[in-house]
Length: 197
Image (cartoon, rainbow, N blue to C red; front, top):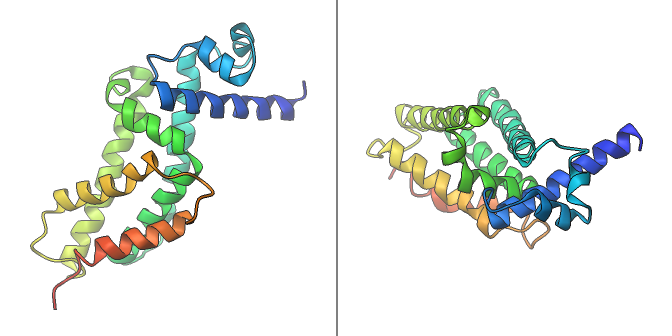
């Protein structure tokens, strides 16, 4: 097996594992179940990964690595608060499109996984995520781009939950692109937080 085909096979196995973890939950998923879904013997899976925990770690770290690469680009772009929110929402939908099963796993499993040292980065990412959104919203209020009477934490939770719950119904290749869904969501959300005239 060549290096390229081994890397491709690992990627295929991780995609399969992500779908199984998302559907059945991490604790309920066995290595045998992942191997069955991948069409191989359970023992053969250990050629590629030492444990199901390693698979989960790779799935979540790849998703968060890509999410933060996109978010960091947005946050470094020097955009205004409204444009930053628009770009963060759009990037979020792109990640839901690319990493739907990983998003579902993160939503279901991150609270209890965060308590394990190997997955401590999940809690760190959540703090960083919240900070980025809250700072942007606070800047928007300070610059009179968003209403002064808003409870920033409630707005953050509302937008976060409104966007990320889409992972439960979104299917790649559907009628709308991630960018179109983001545009529709933003048109609904931003009309509610822009200043009244």
